Amino acid sequence: MSDTLDNEVRMHPRKQLSVVAKVAVGEKAPLDARGVDVSLGGVCLLLPESIAFGEFCVVKFEVDVGGSTRQFSGVAKSVYSAGNSANGFRTGFQFFRLDEANTSLLADFINQQ
View (cartoon, rainbow, N blue to C red):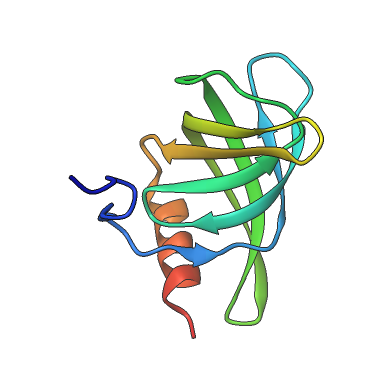
């Protein structure tokens, strides 16, 4: 039997995301994060601390689309976190009910050459 990670099939193509992001969890001050990759379904960020599985957050970052910088903001749920405090926690978020404007922004960013 093969490892499921080797055979994982994603619903949406991912694109490298080299940005600084903000992740707000509840009433705490937003965490600074570094982008890893993004798709229409979610985003992977490198965080300075672990976020609990299933925690809902607001994720914000800027992307360059067609020569202009645009702001993404959306609610996302933490679906995995791996790492440590020395190197950061690679955390996966699944987007939750993105509005049309943010969905369109991500699609434009992911599909641009």
